[in-house]
Image: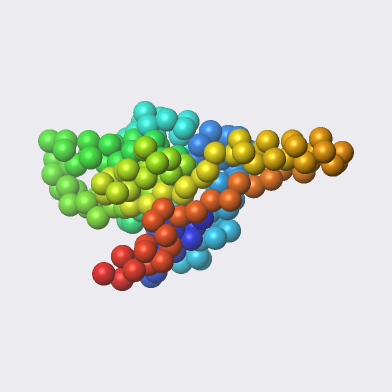
Amino acid sequence: MQGRQFAALLPKGGTVLYIQGPVCDAATLRTQGMMETKPANIQTKMLRGNWTEASAQKAVMAWLRLSTSNNETIDIVGAQDDSMAIGARKAFEEQNSSSTAYAHDHRDRWKHLMFTGCDGLPKTGQIWVRNRTLKATVAIPANTGQALEMLVDAIRGGKTPQQMVMTPVSSYPSIEALQSDAKK
């Protein structure tokens, strides 16, 4: 879903600074899904976080200190978790508010950035989208109900559940709304 969001937000292509979670199945599958659904005209630069705001802020601050980041053009910062997207945003805001000569010369450079995340919980990610802190999030519903249904089906039907079942996700706001907004 995140790859589709990137496509909607960057119809002419661009570059995403992508913050992955720690090495685990969830982070690997989210990265794989994003890479499979993003168009070829969208490039990615990968950083690693640890599912927390602080870890993403630290990772982005370290990246911003690299001389190679001076030459990068980034259009979207996408994170595999809404709180990591907020941490990344804080790192860029801190960079912009710094009084160093570098920050003064590059103050406007990062103002256009869009930030996206995953989880889309009603009391965090969706609020951050509505108040424009995030541009979009991937809404991932709780999977407890799905797991209980699988358990009941297994008990009643006597069959072994599938080893892996994907949770259906949606874009918040919708892909169509993101496409419409990108045209403005």
